[in-house]
Amino acid sequence: MLRSINDVTKLNNGVLMPWLGLGVWKAEGQDVVNAVKWAVEAGYRHIDTAAVYRNEKEVGEGLKNCGVSRKDLFVTSKAFKMSYREVLDQMDQTLIDLQTDYVDLYLIHWPHPELGDAYLDVWAAMERIYKEGKARAIGVANFYSEYIDRILAEGTVRPAVNQFECHPYYQMPELQKYCREQGIQYQAYSPLGGGAIFGDERIQKIADKYGKSIAQVVLRWDLQKGIIVIPKSVKQNRILSNMDVFDFELEEEDINTLNSFDINTKITCARPDQPWPEFLKEKEERMAKGARF
Image (cartoon, rainbow, N blue to C red; front, side):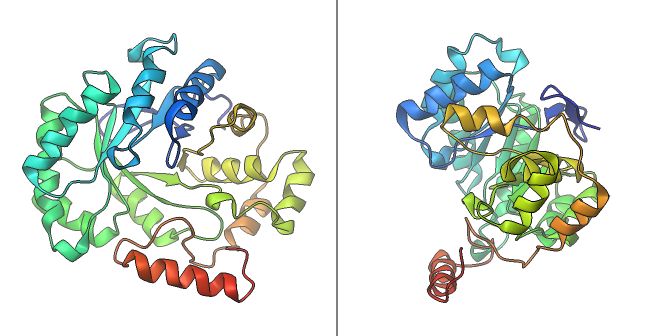
């Protein structure tokens, strides 16, 4: 049973990664600096950012002034560029912006299947970054199993992590199973469904049973399923609340109930093989019909 925010999991290359971290997608300016500061003060040691978020400089400022040694922090960033040379250059800029010599985890942010197998060239760059010590571990985000299969077949380093949208309404159980079998740690971004879980009376009923909030129940559900979580917030009270998930354990029946809420619906991002305009249109149509998300 996970009992502390200090608990970690061992990745397939031996690197230790905290189970709970702070996400900063869509956060800007001083809000990012403050969020990182508050999180580290509270006990978080895992911060997740990306070049495309355009806030790595603010994350770097927060980390520099957080009062905790760099070696005791776990910092993730992601490459969005899709060529070998561009990824190497983006990594160097990320290190400058984060004010660090390395990141603990570097991910390919998106497979861009419309570009064919370009992600294989990107993975070659990731392997070079890893071997040069600029990243302690490398992995992927938003990758289906077929994309990972190509990396396993043609690369020399096994991805350590696959970060994917994951919440009660979008669970991808077969992809989770695949990653477990391949020794790849599954990680949830948007674990709270971009706020869509709030107001769900079914989850509230479970939360009432444990004297917890809806967010705490869903984060605990992920953790008990072996999924790393990085809930995003720039509010100090939410940052503190999101870490208050280590003093209880969900019963199996409640885990199974949450599992049953899966409707295979992405809420915050398009599917990896889906054009964003199509995703936004689908979302608008759902909400026009009265759906909450």
